[in-house]
Amino acid sequence: MLVLSRKIGFGVMLGSDVQITLNRSTSTQVTLWIKAPRNKSVRRSKLDPQTPSLETKISNLVLTLKVGESLIVDETTTLTILKKGGSIRFGINAPRDIRIRRTELDDLNVA
Image (cartoon, rainbow, N blue to C red; front, side, top):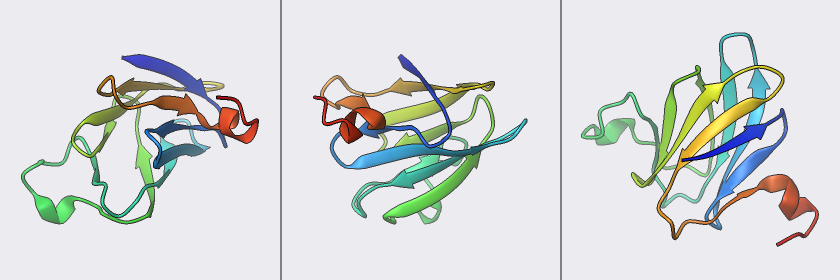
């Protein structure tokens, strides 16, 4: 598991096409903005994976999660909210071939 701390407005890229940004944080919840192509499925981990009607296949999505809750992307990658405070910690489990990077590095054109 990769653990990254993020502040409001910062996020991570999963592969080359899924961007998850920390949009808002309250004392009990974290709101994420997810930008992904329509061919990627995105769902909360607490939903039954056998229920296709609960899968979301849209390009932009805003989800609110609590500490300990997870988001699953394409059934291969899991992002879990680990801790709240000044910055939020994301725990990311992904296959080794999926590149994970901080979005602010893209803004600086750093590889």
